[in-house]
Image (cartoon, rainbow, N blue to C red; front, side):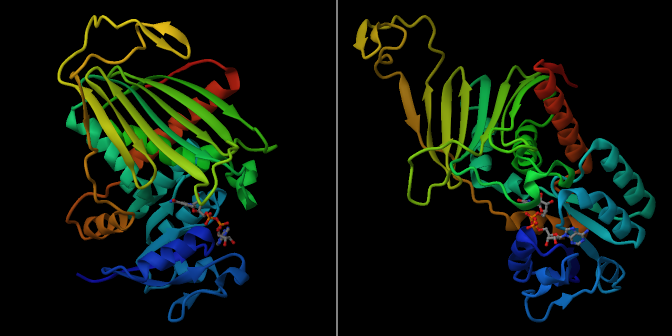
Length: 356
Ligand SMILES: NC(=O)c1ccc[n+]([C@@H]2O[C@H](COP(=O)([O-])OP(=O)(O)OC[C@H]3O[C@@H](n4cnc5c(N)ncnc54)[C@H](O)[C@@H]3O)[C@@H](O)[C@H]2O)c1
């Protein structure tokens, strides 16, 4: 198999991450970078090209695939240019700023007959895959709730991420990953309704907090919550937190951290009509919230998963050579964008939105 030769537009934060990964990846040859700001190319690794313009990169006959890692509001035009030059395309998330933009990108990439996919490598995050493995195992019985949350403690939002016009805001940034994960966890399940609370807590233009509730037709209500300004006195290097909770009628699962820790706590069968013992607690006497019945609650370890972000490009290489399907399909990314529209509408109106 010949190496896939990739040229990358944008040598910022994500461009550097791609450079680190792709220069080491078998099956890919990284050709070089272009950037609208020439200063950004100064530290491009030895041996890679520093293109004088995007056009030069896009028209380099040695480039098979253009990877677009520029600001969100640049994706649409750059995808169109690369497609018209006959290049296959990987676009960073969010693939587009709107459905209208994406639909035109799809039309042009189809007309030009080029491969087009999106870098949703967080489908390989071990915390997500652990939660998904629990979901898939059926061990929790009928699941009724799934919660995915991400909290930052410092209020950091930077550069163009604080401007609407450039595609800033946390919904476009992490929201698109968190929603993509939730939808991909439950293939085939349709969303019946969406309610969202979206806030500008400390940023004037863009959202920096959201809570999204989605009622699915499989009877699950999923909650996705992100806060960038959850001030806390937790110190050390723990400047953000990631959590999953899955609740079913036979058990619960807690998955905490990007290198996930947690457990499955479940029952051998349904616990129905359990007569709670009268117990004194700090909240006063209780029966419902007293200790569980002896011997009925089992604690188990989480399933082990072994995934990492390199897996995204491993799939890309195999799919590019026709050996498997691209993991990230454009209709899936379109569905996430449509969901984000519903989320925004609900955030604006304060009402639940019917969806799908
Ligand atoms: N998949 C992920 O986990 C992940 C993580 C971070 C960022 N991203 C995505 O990567 C993209 C870039 O984000 P970032 O954080 O690296 O931003 P960044 O600001 O650090 O880098 C963007 C770079 O693109 C350049 N640029 C802007 N417009 C350009 C144009 N028209 N032509 C060429 N270069 C241009 C900028 O000069 C800058 O060097 C965004 O779409 C973002 O959502 C994805």
